[in-house]
Amino acid sequence: MSAYSIRTEVKHPSASSAVDWENLTFGRTFSDHMFVVDFDGNQWVDPRIVPYGPMSFDPAISAIHYGQSIFEGLKAFKGNDGKVRVFRPEMNARRLNHSAKRMCMAELPESLFLEGLLKLLALDAAWVHPEDGYSLYIRPFMFATETYLGIKPSDTYRFVIMTSPVKAYYQGAIRVKVERHYTRAASGGTGSAKAAGNYAASLYPAKLAQEQGFRQLIWTDAANHEYLEESGTMNLFFMRNGLLHTPTTESDTILAGVTRDSILTLANSWGVPIETRRIKVTELQEGLRDGSITELFGAGTAATIAQIESIRIDEEDFTPPPVEERAFSNKVAETLTGIKKGVLEDPFGWVHLVQG
Ligand code: COI
Image 1 (cartoon, rainbow, N blue to C red):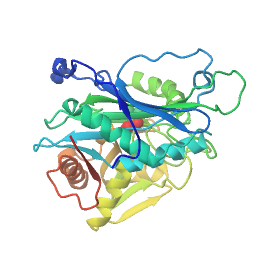
Image 2: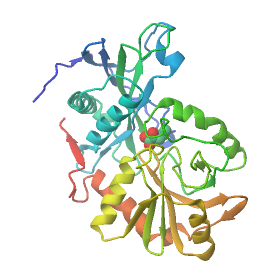
Image 3: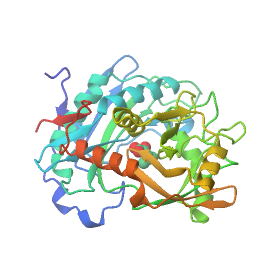
Image 4: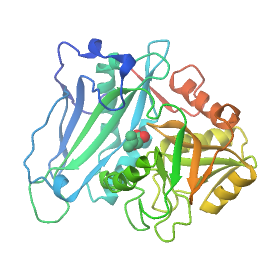
């Protein structure tokens, strides 16, 4: 049952047959359509699906000047049965509103998020590649559209969902470095929101790390750089003495990842003991030194399960056991893929089937 009247302008012909699936780079190819809806200061108006393409704006819109801009990331998959499935979209709809609240933006009805998304996916189903390793990355985002240079929350917003066919964000295991100087998020700040500015702030330290050969940073707390936080593109996990560890998201400095939540749910159901709490960098260091850490990985929508092959902590490099020996994270990766592709049972009701 449709609660909204979403007008649709179909693009002809579809550009999907021209995609070079072999040489797909993350986030550079976009599918035919996007979902767009505007907040006019009172309500969300004119929900529509239109051909993907440029939008024009007044140069004074406040998103550009003062950064009221938030986003989400989720994925759709095509199984061998040809059906399109989207993974836990209601979590993203909820988190978008968490971000909107923190950034003083309009909240979007979750039902409108879901209805726009499912209709968009039904129309662009040809962009979900069925082969293993592929998915359709979905990027919902909202930004302030009021034309005004004074500093105040915008009265008006635009919400858009665009999609992009992808392979994994990281190809193979990655090298990371624990960051002890720069900060991603401070307590009281916007770290738990998926705010565009959080990503802008991380670019410079990430660039310095990349120049040293690291793919990503592991952030530490802003106060003393003593506790592990997250990696910006993913949450951090390690297995120590059979206990699955991940930093708590109870503080307001870490993004509550959907993949993170899915891993914790699976671990619980398998009887794997879990430690979610503030975790000191020294615990990671000691565990890598004495061999009690058997697995180390990041988890995120784009990153999926990103195995960490080496980590630098205070000028010392550590190499956890080889990826093939990491039983838990390999099982998690396989299980999540199986559920998303409709090959394995979905005991938690995570997957939404897209009706063609
Ligand atoms: C995601 O996993 O969806 C992210 O937002 C990470 C990234 C590509 C910025």
